[in-house]
Length: 552
Image (cartoon, rainbow, N blue to C red; front, side):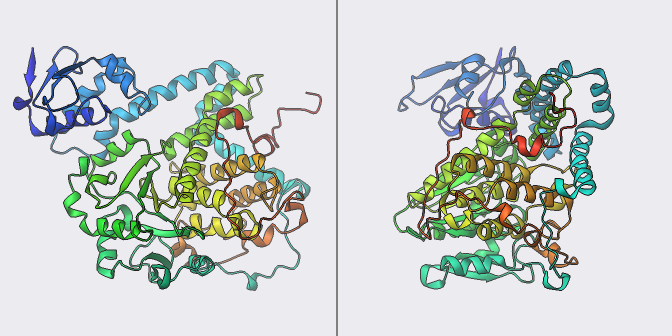
């Protein structure tokens, strides 16, 4: 009742190899499998016969239930969703397969899970609220949420956290180009320490990168250009921070064009050379690669010719860690549910807060930042990326630096960190800020939320207070300043400049009276990221809740 492996098409064998690869320590790769059977009744029960030299028994039978249990930490599928694999295999047989086709079943899985959250929400809200959600949708709820902020700030200056100086002059405010170059100088980045700064002022190497970025001194222009062509959006590994004690670099990039199971690895020779040069900046070290995505999502991208690094093909010691942070669409949906919880007229706030999974997502981001900071503190050169390297990558890169470098916990340092890792390295502020845009996602707001969570645990370590973070959130969504205009430095420099946000939020009211400076010393903050350690940022999300009266 089954088909032998030799009778299957190469496309089907590739699909089945993905299933085997996602079964850690239970099944070897396709090259070690001598025979493979597919039960035609279930489409999922597999029998693998492995070489006798393997540590596994000569024959291992793996049921659908056991397979799902073995990978439950990586993926959240259930046994009843086994039909996914049939559709997945059939997708390979279509020569005109596209990215949308390969991900359609995964998106359906997300939709089913989201429907469960919607059921909880709809059962807990009044009919009027249900009607409003049907008419406006998720984006409508988010838009209303921030419109309420803007209306309050416009009608009452005392309600606004923004402090506008009377002495500001438009002529004194300009976009800040090449902030990375100033930071490189502060960190002591030079050819003497193994790094060189690349001139990208024409934005011809990478249009979404800053006008200047640093790469290892050993990397030639040929290797640099070749690596950019072998990375998504040409976003090559570039230095963003250098550890002042052990010299471990933190670099950021987008995903490599590796293909499934590194099928394009032979075409990535120049990119691999850059990674080797990155590792060799700290002799005798292990290169740590951090992929912000869940491994399943990274594999889905690999099917479209992108993916992640095959560390086995990188000379020298290296490893890769998947940080399991969800994409912008999941975050947008989670934030819409958070907004629904904060604006609910019913007595079910905590129930809706849990259903939104907002704190769960904050936990995963904070966890990723701590893991990266630990690696760098131990002296390991590190590279972080997600898909295109401008959302989750910016969050994680900035958080790791915030935990390691006390300079970024000062007012001036935090401003610099935001401009460097979000503005200069191409976070899509225009796309992510407009709540009417389907590309909207609260990535930067999420970052500010995580910073607030850290600030709560270390009240003496930050020069600025909570009001400063709220003022940044207000200025970010109000578009009163040109700091967050455009999707990258190239776009920002081509637009008219108004006031910088940092000029608008000055004053003692934003300073932390409990702050204790530790000077230039590296003082590594290691916050807890358990669910018990996280809270809803009520000072931001609940401050304009019109449904809560003083009596209540």
